[in-house]
Length: 470
Image (cartoon, rainbow, N blue to C red; front, side):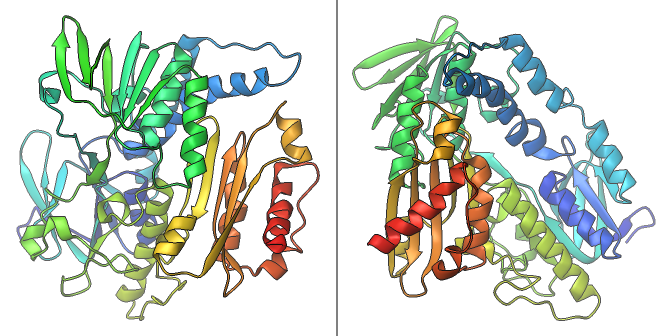
């Protein structure tokens, strides 16, 4: 080690919400911590994903909800929506996040970090110079994920939007093509349709949101069509080519021209250039245990949290993993054996069967745990009940409210292992379901969790009644 090389107890590669949590919890546990970040501190979620996308969706959704009530007239200003989105990203400046990091006592190191051998991180600064920092206790990978472009002929010869381009757009394109029917594709198709684009969505599969309950994809497709989106299922793109200032899309016998093409066909862990090969780990086979430790690396010093480990690629799950891993690092540094058994303080047990998610479409999809199909695939003796969300609370939220709820029950243990809500204003209901799933609350006890009248949560009682009726 040379004189100008720095040493910290913990070095975190990646300064998004996941990396910030890892560094913060390690620091709170009495360990010195540094974050290495090559872009904006605060990461993808803060500037190009979760936050700006929801800001684009929120105002048009509020107006759509208001219009569903008799006697209400509502509208919005597109430029104001874009300006509000920009305010949430601080105009893509990270001064506030940097102040938080420094105020928390964490050292910020600007540059691209990669593992460079045992407990070492090489940093390539913006000017191209390199330096190395060392970790006494742990190196934590929190490098997130990157888009995966599909093999469509001509795609690399035209300009395309990724999710970053969509969420940071300064203007609304007259015509937008969307390739992909996952969360990003569905949310951005809805956002830009409501902001004024003519949107065509291409999905190679037979339904949208394929990892959710079938009713979710069906209802979201119907909702997108109601918002004016041309939803084309079982239809991918055969070819893409320039067409003057536009982009020509060929799908079967059809060709259409769009002004922008959003490619939203999935992401992969950002592990390829993380330096894992320097410690004998194949980047394509990165795996971790429940405490976040990378398997196959001796010495209990290398951790991977968030999207990069591929377990549950959602910001809130990554932050959860980061808290778990940091607490495990602190425990090991103190010579304590971490509690890594199921639901232990140092085990990200929820990653396996208790992951919550909300898709901010119209209708919203709020789900936690397993779908009926997933429970069957995992060999869990189970039964699903599916009912309309038709209670006094939902009727008050919207005239002609239409929603569905699906509850998956482990029939041996009589506990809920999955719950999906599809409908207006269901996002805030998912945490109650998450508590039921994580807590493995017996159905016999859930009968005593009385839903407030009149709220949409009354549907819990209807689900229990439907299950009891068989």
